Image (cartoon, rainbow, N blue to C red; front, side, top):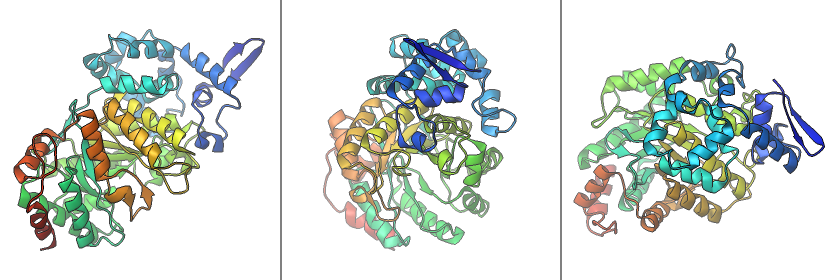
Length: 459
């Protein structure tokens, strides 16, 4: 249905819900590339004002992608929790914004309503919010998950130790792991992006990581980010698979471009559970997302990239994941042009994911041809720390030598913990103390730990 809105003597006409959402989005290069962005600042404001007056119930009756042709839409509608939605069912999008910013919407209440929110609802309300609004609401959301340690507790910040190497050289990977562990990184997981998707190479890396974990009794989890079909093959062979990784998107067509479907994800989830490798819990899926992935695969159906991203979180939510990671600036300036757009997108993604009940982390990153630099990443890093992000990336020197992009370093994670008084996952912090890597104040210690860790990895 059309959504007209009049400012002065001029009436703007928005043909349907997805056009209204697209025109209300803060400016970003991806929406302009797709021909979906507002033509002027005034048109964007008109769309935001019309969106603010839209009843939330509309999102349950008008799909941005038809129910009949998209399995993600079917998942969103079929899994909607009407009882959880009841307390806010009379709200407009603007009412939801005001309520979220108020004191009634505390941590407990936000956890209760999360199953009643659809991705399109949270995408819509994010479009009405300033950056500080996104931070304030996300800070109130606490999403806790467990595998071998506990992620997401208030006052804690975890780090994915990412020891990538362009040839999967074990000594090069070992050096990066030692570096990260001695900075207190690795509690979210030790996760390698392999140079190839070979099952044999992936298995070799998994055995190496598991040997390290067992030798030092580390309360963390490992992951090699191969395609989910490769991982499933290794599960059948009883290779020590902890977390099961897959990149996902917000439409059936975009997921097909990744070679996945909801049924395949369900099969992989069940396979992972069958190994029973978690000691504290069974959250074992690790998903990565990013604004622009649906557009880059021509699977966006003329839906704006931020709404498509929020729909990816519906896919993730269906599998009770251990971690969800928005790789916010990785796709490039065609989708998020500069530091300002990357910062805004990062705060949106974290807000939307947390509000939907997901354990959100972020790869705070940019490509070398984007109009961004490390100062922009410092800003987003600090803002997300204030907003209560579950985890960030830890990469040697913040420079991934295999994927060739800029991210955050072990030192960046140490900075954020110190300046905001955040601590590692509790079980991992106890391990750091036992190993003599850190003291009770979070200060790094020296000793023989480096030589011991290196010897464990290369022998």
